[in-house]
Length: 263
Image (cartoon, rainbow, N blue to C red; front, side, top):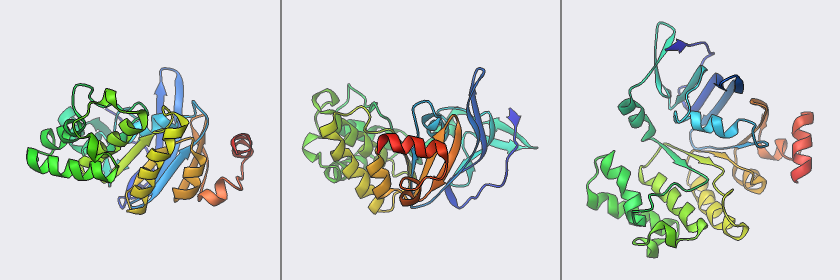
């Protein structure tokens, strides 16, 4: 249980955060974060290592607990219910139900090594969504075709390249038919020549209207695909805006310094 102190959140947004705070011990890593993502938009979060961007992303599906403020997905608080201005953490089963609508793609793939590609894709739809194995498999095979890996359905993750594993991870997230997908630096673990194949899949998803929040160092992707870019540093949002404005013409000295070094 903790105090609930925040401003108004917008239930029409896929993600809405007001006054979000998070600490690890004495280190405050998120400081009064206000953030919105409308449905159908792509929001990229940029910033130096240690700025709090990945922690914030993990808070969006309650992989990290917030210490203050409000954070909602689709109008529902993430991981908590509110009563008498206090927030009470949900039971694990209730949290799992909320997470079913939030896809997550990690930088290290996180595929089950003992399962084939298609088994990785159907595990959650069958176990969580209670789909039939046939229905889940049919949909999984359509997703593998979508990411260009239909010939790898029976392969094990260890036999795939990093780019192929990440495309499988994206297909696995899509298999749950989520309302939102979170990407935590999805290309950072890849060899440079494999980055493009993953970004191409993400661009296709964006063109289809998938709501996405992407923590990334891929400035070109953010400039081309994002509807909104957020620059974080030191646990705060320094600047937000459309990519053509924020990346090309940042207003703050910190953002100007960051983009001048990487562009």
